[in-house]
Amino acid sequence: MFEAIKSPYLVPFYDKKPCGFQVEEAHTKPPEDSPGRKACKRLLKEKIKELKKLQDVLYASSTHSVLMIFQAMDAAGKDGTIRAVMSGINPAGCQVYSFKQPSSEELQHDFLWRTAKRVPEQGRIGIFNRSYYEEVLVVRVHPEYLNSQNIHVKTGDIDDLFKNRYQSIRDHELHLARNNTTILKFWLNVSKEEQKQRFLSRIEDPSKNWKFSMGDIRERGHWDSYMGAYEKALCETSTPWAPWYAIPADNKPFMRLKVAEILVDTLRSLPIQYPELPEHEMNRLHEAKELLLSE
Image (tube, rainbow, N blue to C red; front, side, top):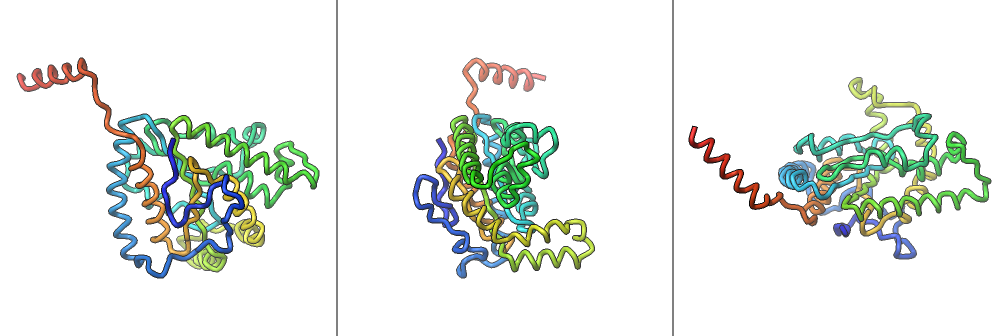
């Protein structure tokens, strides 16, 4: 089974207690010795070329799939990162789903139902822009949302509910991993100050006005609660087969490069190759070749 690619941004695994991951110690900016913005963009192009080749092998082999999960505060750069990193691959081998407020139908099922339907097929890369993790992030910050799921929990029992949800997530991801779905989870860690500047940019730039929502400002008011929810979720659900990576997000070119590097290194580690045809099918290829050459 897949084992997580090493990285300075890899969140310690759940089985190592205490967790060792603290949001306040997680970097939002690149290290001082990291490549500059132009160098990051150039290196990203090189990674995209390699990713294109690896994705072709993944698609042809049709034995494994990759699920990338992106979680972040608003304006951290999820959409742009997905667009930039996946820009060179075959669209037939990639599927992106964005999970927003659940529908009335989705609320009638368990919290994993709507995303379980969208897990990528073998040979494909699936991308979740937000995911079932909203149920231990936004719902932890706003437990009143449980009422719409017909879940009524006493105040003293709320921690047990989330403890059970973390367990359900770990079990779900282990099941997927056992069935050759490689899971990569990225928390794009943007600072509160950088988020403020990006919100202002959305307000001041007419071409970005459509991205802004007053709801984003309201959620910003719960920043500390969200940081606590992220810290708990990452600590409880980072595993060798479904790792979390806390990627600095204040510098977009650096963030995108780090995501691309982890994805490329992961694909390199998978036991995938172009299919080898059995002898009788190879004979048919030779026969077809002779027929074409004899025309």
